Image 1 (cartoon, rainbow, N blue to C red):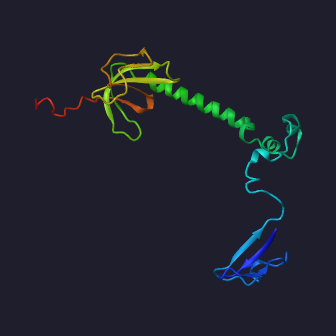
Image 2: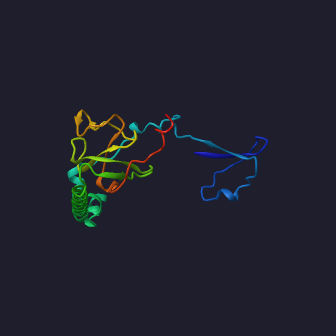
Image 3: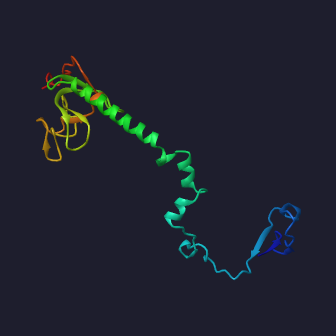
Length: 194
């Protein structure tokens, strides 16, 4: 490649041909431009299509035998998917979470009044209608019939009925989101206006 320096009046000032010289050693001022001349014979856009670039490939077996690879580093340091302790710890945490969830669910009885606290939503009151496992998702679930139409279903999900209620009054929540207690239905005074 050749570099040429043009002044503000678009006149050639000089060729920038000293390979060891820094750009600041040339008389470059505001308004100047550097023109690049490519004499390599490359065509515009020739190097933009990466599918035409030859790539080095190594078989998985040979890569696995190398001691200076990322995979070898991860194995040596027991990181990522090669950290057996992490996987065992993760499995233990999931088992403990499931046991805790099951214990919370066992303490909730069908027919009890409850308050449901979902993240980012106001608390909702209702009646526990179902406690147990479901076909739609793993784990323990609590089926609640809300006092108002603030739910997502009518007690059924994907055609399977778990309890009966009006449409939009039913919901399934995790046991830790349910507080059982003396939660009477709230009176909003709507009956007095009719």
